[in-house]
Every structure is written in C-alpha cells, then in structure tokens.
Image (cartoon, one colour):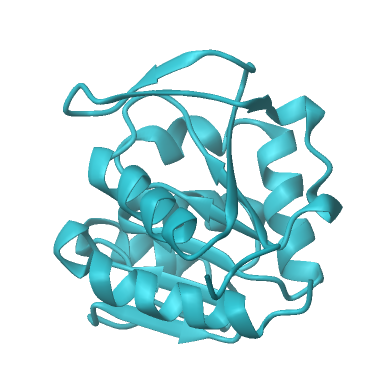
Length: 176
C-alpha cells in the first residue's frame, strides 16, 4: 500500500481508451490510493471506445484540485473533448504549477497542449500527435514512458506497465 493517503483525479469523457483509463485506476487502487473519476457531470455513465463503461464520481465544477495529489488524463478520443473545458485546463495547470504528478498517455497530450504547459518538456505520446506535441514546444521521444519531473507520459496500451510503474514512483515521492 505504497500510496495510502494519496488522492488522484482520473479525468473522463466519452470515447476514452478503455485500457488507458481502467488500468491506471486499478493499479493506483491496488497501491492504496483513492481515485476519483471526474467528468463533466457527477454520477454520469461514460462509454469507452470499446464499450466499457465507467460512472463518474464528481463533476469538473465540483473539484478542488488542491485536495488531490495527482491527475491522470486518459487517451482515446476523449482528450479532444476534455480540452474544451476550462475547468479541466485549470486543473492541469494547477498540478503543473504545484509540480504534482500529471499522467498522460496516447492522445492525452492534447489536454496538456491546450493547457499550455509543454514548452521545453520531454514527453512521449502516440506518434499520431507527435507534430502537435512538438509544435506546442515539447521535446518528443519515441519511448514507452518518459518522465520529466512531475509529468509522466506514455505512448499506448502496450506501454501501460512501464507507464504505471513510473507514475506510481513519481506519486510516491511527491508531497501530499
């Protein structure tokens, strides 16, 4: 239970990549962290790209990011929806300003791009958004996982074990 007492926001909207949302949630809970599923509305069912549902615990508008230790952005097509909410971008900026862990996988980089926090940051993502990442000022690497301080990024579902190993290590060391 390395993460007992840690609280994590897992963002959600429709068309999330099922494994990229559920695998981190399960791994963090296995380590003792509390993971709240945070969507546009509370108690709303969201459906992944492959049909796996999840129900949100809390609405974006009702979150105080200062009550949390980290944030995760799922991949799939949901990042294109998530980045349209000012509340989501404010949450991501909060974690960047406080240097608390931000996890992003696959297309999740779009949210960090829209939050304006990637200039000079070493990252990875699905190769499909490499140009978006570099145009936002990031230094892109084709690696399973890249850790740059408090930002942990990964490419795609086969990289999930590497991603979560590193994210858990960063979260374990972070201040509460």
